[in-house]
Image 1 (cartoon, rainbow, N blue to C red):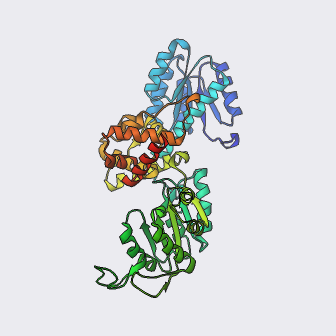
Image 2: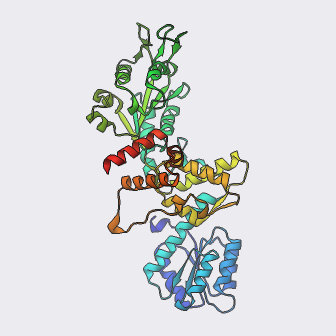
Length: 450
């Protein structure tokens, strides 16, 4: 955020003119509007007449103390942050103030850098809390194409969605499990000229291979045992619209050949039929695997890969989406609360920090599962960090000499989840927000990398 765009109003309360001048000079240089008061009573008058985002108050002052001001702000100014300024001899009092609602404290003497860092940290906590705990619903300003997210990573998704929606070209959507690839596919369809026609989603990994061919291409009566009548396939159902082939990497070589013909000729042949049927469809495929690696290993046809990889959209992992996680927390909390007919809870600063710091191997799907569970299981109207799953409360800590890759972090997290559920893969998959098949693949891949 550049200096010119900083809008938070800051109030400095101190009985020392020199201290006020130093703090005011430093914060004004950073672009913050700053008001000042020499005592608590003057500060209260300002708070009653002006919106203040952050109060920086001394602990010891003549008359009413800064500690009393902290309590007043917490009780009456819910969207105002507080920083306590204290001498070394009164640190215990500052710690007590933090317990009662101050976002942080500065011990005198402090440097200019320490002041700015403390202010930025307190305001960041305030911004996070406002995003999640503000009374109004998550508005359309936080959404594009029905997808919640304002981060730069998501802006890089919205642009190719627009391009893809205006084209008949095949689209390949890539990204980890649970990132929202189907939402991207739906956004493309419903913002295209085909929006009034069918959108047909197909999970290629969730249908047995023997059945998938019939589901995709349809069959005529008597073409196989049990075919008591003719039935159109998904490609015919999607005629004029869009078909979404999720987990495209799971197609057998036989079906890859048949799909290649659909892409080349825009026609399908039902099982048991000797004639082809023209179809007008837009094909969107998705995968959480590296198709190029599968091509090199002989598990995926190179010609099909090139046919699919015309327009590519890479959906970012949740851990790479910054403050989008806060918007999603708010959205899922409000959604679950409405469904359960109970008030949406307030999330404490510590709970938000834990949620934001978590690596989210299951991505948005895992986040939604966690928030729903919190709404169901928490009786209080406030979510604390202690309400979160233990794995989220104790995130791995590393120093600069011990950085690990995201793959290593994921491996460690999966191991800890499995240990926590005594090896129950179904329960582990549910906690992680992925299906058992994806979990097995991740475990196998991690074992091969050991």
